[in-house]
Structure formats: C-alpha cells, structure tokens
Image (cartoon, rainbow, N blue to C red; front, side, top):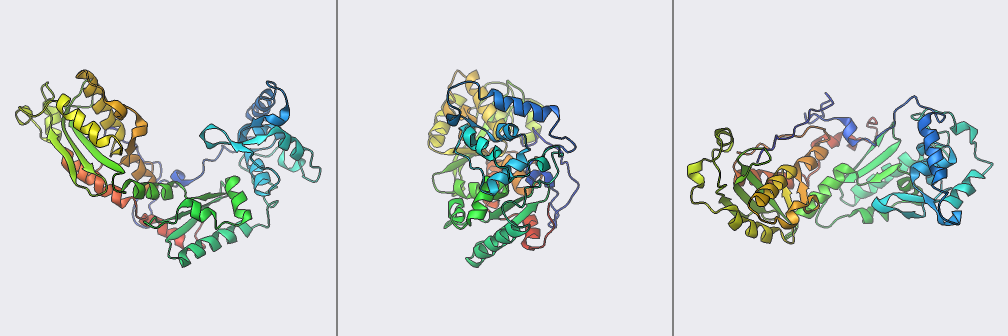
Length: 394
C-alpha cells in the first residue's frame, strides 16, 4: 500500500497544545472573500438568477429557491438571510437533492413586504461584515449562553462534549465522543430550545461537526459485520500496475480474513520490491488474481470496504481486474469504500495527508489501518483547548 501516493502540505504553522500541527481553516465554516459589496457583479448575478428561476412554470407559490438564490431574490447577503431564519421570520419549506433547504417564493415575498425590517441597513455591505440583523433572534450573547448550557447538560449526563466558535462565520459547533449507548445526533437535537433549533437551520449552530462526525463514523464502522479493512501491495503506481499481495481484516475484531501473495503474471520492478520487499521468487506459485477476487468480493458483499488510501487500493483492484478480464463488482464504486486517510485528516484538524506508518506489507499496513480506525473513535487531544468556556474563537 503506497500511502504517500497523494500528499498535501499543511497550510498552517500553528501547533495544537498536543503538539499536532493543524490548519484552523480545516474546521471553520467556509467564509466568502471580503471587500465585496451587494452591488458587485456576483450579487447582481445571484439576483438575476433568482428571478430567472421564476419564469418557468405557473404559480409562484409552488416554486422554491435554494439559499443562494433566495438571498439574491431579497437582494441581501447569505448571512442576512440566515439571520431571518434564526429569528423565525423565514422558514425552509423542504430540502432539495443533497439536503439543501429550499424557500418558497411566497414566503420570500412576505418577508420582503415587512416594513419594520431595516432593509437599507443590510444593503451595500461587504460580504464579511456582521449583519445588522444578527440581534433579530435575541440579544447578543444569548446563543452563546444556550450553547454552553447545552454542553454543561451533556457533561452532567456523562457525555464528553465540547463546543467551539468560529468568529468569522458566527457559528458554534458542538461535538462529543461517541459511545455504544449514544447519544446520537437526533438525541441531542431533542434537547435544543426553539432558539437553538432555528440556529441550526440558520447555519449558526452545527450539532456534530466534521470532527464529531468522523468519530461517530468510526464507531459505526467498528460494529460487528459492518466493515472490512483492505490493503494491497503492487508492482507500482502506474495505470498498468498489478497487485502482488492483499490482506483483508474484519474491522470489528481485527482478525485476518484474507492474507495472500498474488502472482501478478508480470515481473515485479526492482523499485517496487525495494518498497515492500516482495520479489518474483516469492510470488511464484501464488494464486493469480482470478482466484483471489471472488473471495474478496464475498467478504465485501455486505460490508463497507475501508482502506487507508482508498483511492489507490480501489484503483488497483479495478485495473488488475480489468487486465484479467474480471468484473470487480461493487468495489469499482467509491460509495462502497471509506478512506481512513481523509478521515484522519479531518480528525487531526489539518490539511495534510499523512503516511500511515506501516511496514509496507499488506497485513502489516492493514493492521495499522485497523488500529487507526479505533483511534478515530477517541477525542483528539488538541480539542481539549475548547473545554474552557472562555476559550478564544477560531
């Protein structure tokens, strides 16, 4: 397994208190560029697109717009639209494909007719400027106090919870360490006040952010029968490379389900042998891929297939199968896989894709990946800086 096939360099020189480097931008809500006003071409284009979307089809009451077009329709910024949602003045009627909320045009027209809203105050502002409507939902600091009260309640129930605030996005994120008994996200949602529920809808509160989702995903992957961990060693990185060794572990127990050398039916380059130590002599007499693939497909049939560098192992399985005239089945689709390297990057709060650190043999690397999966269920040490309720915003 070549876990360094794709490596990115961190964009931050910050170091967490645990000594792990990370880029704070990896855990922020993306922020639009500053210095642009509502009169610029982008906003004008959003407005025109919003109105153009109303041309087709009869009855404006039956039509909806996504968040960006809804903001353009009202000639406000997205953050101003979010303030209307958090204040309960505007509600999403449903969700479009991909979970994007949609706003009914008749509701947008109703809000646009509200004369007690200071429309002039939100127009002509830079995209990054705070919204003058940010207090519509309640006094400054009210949401902060409610979030802290939520975390205190979860901790009182024995949940290792924490919260962090993004000043630029004006958004709180609440995460917690998973256990076999929960709580799940839906359980925490039921604890929210009406004010915080609206904050979730307005993207001012995230219940279970990227780090928490990674931890809970790892916990789910460890359920018996839920996933397998795969690693391959190959003749190289190129498009004609073939597999020379494969190992499959049960993700829950870590027990080997398959561990075999593979005869690639082509010479192994010396450069590849220097990486994993596998030679032509070692694979002589080993099963060929047509004998290995059926067993792999059987093991993966009802389970998610995990790999450290999922893109690499999936590609190698696919191209070796095609070269052998075989069908890799559902293993050709990214949806059947999970990438531990990408999950680790999120968990560490960095943008670096780090090497696994295995021994470059299939079983050793699969074992290292399996151990990493268990680590991902634990709270990252660098997040303990957010245990302090007065911790600075990110």
